[in-house]
Length: 306
Image 1 (cartoon, one colour):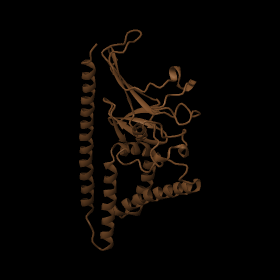
Image 2 (cartoon, rainbow, N blue to C red):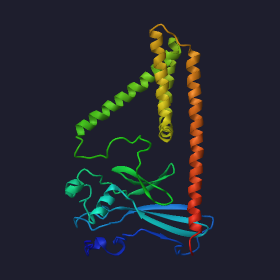
Image 3 (cartoon, rainbow, N blue to C red):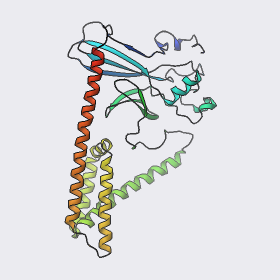
Image 4 (cartoon, rainbow, N blue to C red):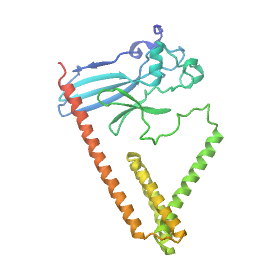
């Protein structure tokens, strides 16, 4: 393997550690409160191999994540590299393949079009997953106890499209796409209110009031609703099913086949109740899973040799 160059960027506290380890009972200055229990995560850049270019920035290095487990006055360290596609390709080659920071044109031809994700910026715990983040790439999911890399995290399929690439998307095309998307979303929300009002009532004042109230509520609680849907993606399918149900009712009325409104109300209420039960059950399962992981981590730390 090539040696790291003898320059300040790889000397002293900036020298790469290139290690993965489990270290039990870390020495600490002072006493650690026994009441302090839990895990602290950090992620930092750590070169696996010497860079292709010596004038590169230090931050262009593989992500290495650490877990400090506080347990009854003791602290244990677990440290692993984030196994990104970039990391695996370079480890298989035994040398650096990617070039300068955010400059894909300086990469080795063998990794052209491959992910440049370093996952070396910040950690975040989300829905029982430990995510290693970088601003220009999808999050990388890891097990919060073992730190084993699980792969890209797409938030249950809601994170769409590849990472941004200045080479692929002209500014004008991006602007027009954003404008078209905003217009489409506005139209969908407006038609949602209109369909709902027309499908459930016949009085014009009630239709107008329903549309106005829907717009006000949408503006007021859009943030919390978006967060709730992000946590529970099946709610989106439920809402689409409601729209489909109302659409079928409207088509039926156009064909002089009227569906009693009570049937519509009952179907929507029943589906909502079932989904709320599913949400509650999933929340309990997630809490139980998190508790088991916590006990596993605590037991593992507690059984460590002093």
